[in-house]
Length: 285
Image 1 (cartoon, one colour):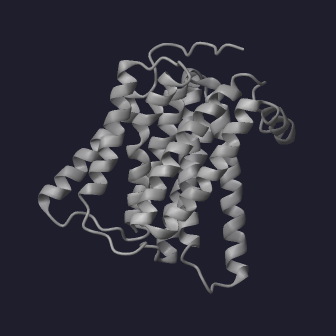
Image 2 (cartoon, rainbow, N blue to C red):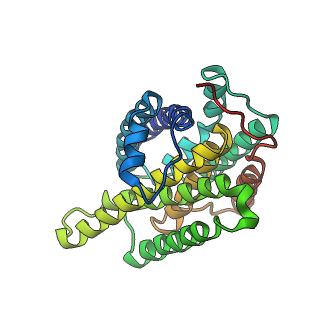
């Protein structure tokens, strides 16, 4: 399990850097259009910044999958969330992007809340990959319904000013769906190909839709609010999935339960503070 946690640390750093590279590349190309997926993909691939970010993200994804196969999903995602502060550090120090004080606070709150949640659970043994079919179908179905509602609602005129934020939340939910599915696939050895193939296909589709929503969100918003929200939503949803689907244990004591409720409140407050007060400035060409 310790190897899985170490891999999660590496995956978190690589994912944050990859997201910043893709954010810079996204602002140098035409807006993506879901009705023109191939054209949008070619346009993005032509951007050196985005191509570098995508390549690094692909490697980070493989490291993440390896971490999920070796450690409980709750701990893996909490470790990834705990590295959220590095997002602000890299954004400011490497790329020179401004980070507002409220965004520093949001990242600290969100990361601290998810780490606190992980620290208050009993000791884990093994990778905790077992699950019930009803549990994973119910949880994944709930994520699909939530994602569908956000996808339909973000086009409302009254929400026009928050479309970038809603797209970031949508991408986070879809990434969580794929993460839960991948964790489940690490424990289905011996299951027939007739069951695994549709599962893999659905995971790939949701992963592709998550990538589209992420790019659309990155093109509309600043790096911290967009990447931070995507990571916060994806990590929180997967930690919840770890408890509800894979039976990752909650604290057995009243104090532990109170601390976990506090951690959840910190995550919610973090999401409220993440969007910037100012309009994101255009990146230099």
